[in-house]
Image (cartoon, rainbow, N blue to C red):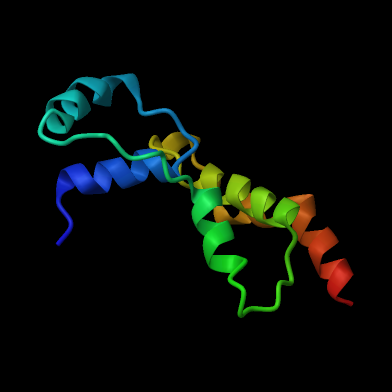
Length: 103
């Protein structure tokens, strides 16, 4: 079962966003109960491990995965006012280039 400390740790590890200053004190108090010995596990690292599985045929390059992670990261901002909308992400030139490669 996931607890608040685990959830915040995952958010911090998978987001390229900086934890807002106003959350810092609460996070430090929560984190005292946990040890942070593990190597950071980034969204890109996770996606590459999942996507480049030896049994799968890869349609994306490592550069594509990096760009996808950057786009997802823009939607995963801690502060809602700084998050990119789905429409903004879909307007990115990467989608046009990717679809043109598929034709």
